[in-house]
Amino acid sequence: MTRVVIIGAGIGGLATANMLAKAGYDVAIYEKNDQPGGHAGMMEIKGFRFDTGPSWYLMPEVFEHYFELFGKDVNKELDLVRLSPAYKVFFENESPVIVTSDEKRDAETFEKIEPGSGEKLLEYVARGDDIYQLALKHFLYTNFSSVRDFAKFDVVKRSHMMTKLAFTSIDKYVAKYVSERRLRQILEYPMVFLGSSPFAAPAIYSLMSALDFREGVYYPKRGLYTIIESLTKLGRELGVEYHYASPAARITTVNGRATGIDLADGTHCDADIVISNADLHFTETRLLDKSDRSYPASYWNKREAGPSALLMYLGVRGDLPELEHHNLFFVDDWKQNFESIFKTKTLPDPASVYVCKPSASDDSVAPKGSENVFVLVPLPAGVSLAGKVLRDAAEKYLQLIEQKMNIKDLRKRIVVKELFGPNDFEEKYNAWQGTALGPSHLLSQSAMFRTPNVSKKVKGLYYVGGSTTPGIGLPMCLIGAELIYKRLAGDRLGGPVKKIHKLPEQQ
Ligand SMILES: Cc1cc2nc3c(=O)[nH]c(=O)nc-3n(C[C@H](O)[C@H](O)[C@H](O)COP(=O)(O)OP(=O)(O)OC[C@H]3O[C@@H](n4cnc5c(N)ncnc54)[C@H](O)[C@@H]3O)c2cc1C
Image (cartoon, rainbow, N blue to C red; front, side, top):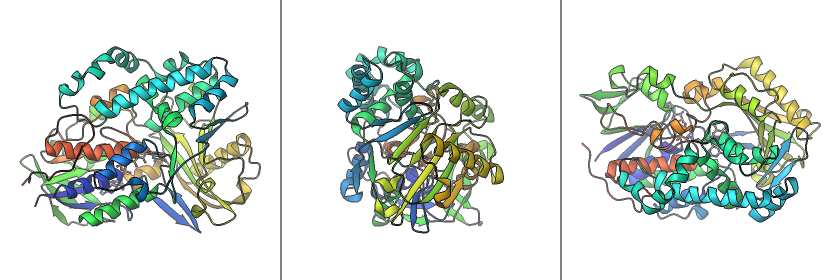
C-alpha cells in the first residue's frame, strides 16, 4: 500500500489525510505540537473554551461539499447557527454600524449614511457574488495545469472585467461605489482575512463582501475547533494514524525522490509520498537539503508575508452587552493603519482591532455569568514582540477597546488573560516572519502566482495549507486538500472533486 506521511496536523494536513486514506493510501500525520488544528486550535482555562485562531465560518458550501465527499452531512457534524446580526462595527468618532447579512436591511443602513449607497451596495454584492461563483467553478479548485478550464464561455465572457479587477486595488474599486469613509471601510476590511491591505489587494477579492452580506456568517456551537474534532473523528474512522509531539526535522530524498521524514528524536519514517502542511517557507528552507529546495533565498526576499497579530484570550466576569458575537473597531486613518502594518512595520497606534464574543451565541464556552472574549490586533510581520513589551502593548490595546467600544470597566473584570504574539507564531507553528496567516493575497501571490503545492525538485513531495494554493482560511485549506488529491489522480480540470476514487499505487 502507498505510504503517505503528512507533516503537520493543521486543517490542510487533516483534510488531505482523510481524502488520501479514503482513496486507499496508508496515511500517518506527524505534528510538532501536542494537539491537532495548528492555528485553528483550542484552549480550555478555568471553564472557558477558547478557539485559538479562526472565529468566522465563511464559504459554507465548501465545508458542505468536503463532508459530502465522505457521505457526511456537515449540519449533522457541526451544530451550525447563522449569526444575526453578522457583526457590529465601531468607529473612532461615529456611532456603531450593524451588518445583518440581510442585503435589503444592510442596504437601508448604507442609504441612511450616504444617500444612493443602498443601491450601490446591492450592485457591489451582486458583482462580488458573480465573481465568487466563477471562482468556485474555475479558479479555486484548480492546480492551473490546464488552460482548457479557462477557455470556458463564462470565463471568456468576463475576461475583460476580471483583468480590470486584477489590476485595480480594492480601495480604488470600492470608491467607485461608495464615498463615505465608514462604508468604504466595511467593504474593504475583509482583505485582512486574506493577509493583505485594501490598498494592495486586487479588486477581484470584492467577492469577500458577497460572503458576509449575502451568504451570511455562521458559527458552529462549541466553537470552530469542532471542525478539527470532526475531521480527526473522520480520520480515525478511515484509519489515519496521528502522532503528536512529533516534530519533523528533515524530509529525506534519494535521487530526487521523497523517501520519508526524519523526526527530531532521530526516528526515520519511510514514505512513498510526503506532504508538508507546515509553513512552506519553513519546509523549503529548514526541512529540505539545499539541493532539494525549489526556491532560492531571493524568491522569498521578494515575497510578502501576511500580518502577524497580538491575540488575547480573555475570561470576563459579568455581561458585555456592548458587544455582539463579532465586533470590529476601525481607526479613522485607515491608510496609516495599513502602512504601519505593511510598510513602516511599526505597531499601529491607535490600531483597528477585532473582538469576538462567542458567548453571545453559545453558553458552553464560558462559565455561567461570564463572557468569553477573543481579541485580535493585526501587527506587522517580522517584528519581535514578547515579554513585557507584549504585555504593555496588550494593556494599551485593551484601554483602546474600553474607550472605543464603550466598556468602561473591561480590564477590572478580566479573570483569565492569555496573550499570544508574533514570536509565539514563529515558535509554536514555525511561521515565516511570525505571520499569523501566511503569504498575503497580493495579485503576485494569488491563484496561478501563489507558490504551488508541488515541489519542483523532489518527486513525491507536496504542500498543503495557507501558505500554498489556493490560500489562507479554513475553507481554502479544505480546497487545498482536494487539490492534492487531484494532482495524485491526474485530474487537471477545475471545479470541486465529484467523488473520491481509489488512487493508483505510487511505489
Ligand atoms: C488569529 C487567526 C484568526 C483567523 N481567523 C480565521 C477565520 O475567522 N476564518 C478562517 O477561515 N480562517 C481564519 N484564520 C486562518 C486559518 O486559521 C488558517 O488559514 C488555517 O488554520 C491554516 O491551516 P493550515 O492547514 O495552513 O495549517 P496550520 O494551522 O498552519 O498548521 C500547520 C501545522 O504544522 C505543524 N508543524 C510546523 N512545523 C512542523 C514540523 N517541523 N513537524 C511537524 N509539524 C509541524 C504546526 O505545529 C501546525 O500544527 C485565522 C488565523 C489566525 C491565526
